[in-house]
Image (tube, rainbow, N blue to C red; front, side, top):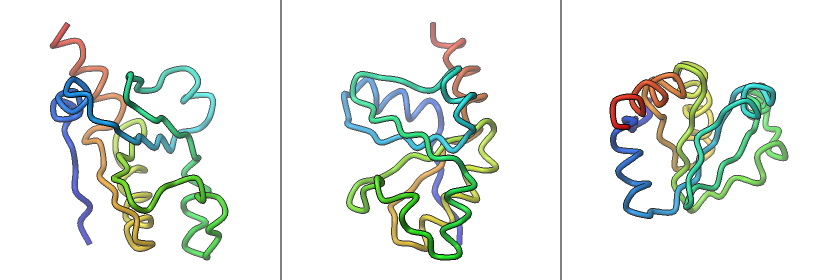
Length: 114
């Protein structure tokens, strides 16, 4: 099953349009606290990827804060862990897309638009 992706460019466009976004960052808490994508209309959540991997053994409690009726943009450092997590969440009927290239690509893209 292929999870959809969103480019940093498209994410910024959605942010600029004032769209309410839910961003799930699956990196370690220290990395998240150090830097994460923020915006006026962004609900930013940090759930470590290990908790999402645990969903495969049906531990739904670790992600009960995630809404099933709204799209969730999943990100990590480069997009690899986010893709794995998104695939697991998609199997659990969450509406997920992955930020292409992760936080690394986001930071690089922001340099080009400033």
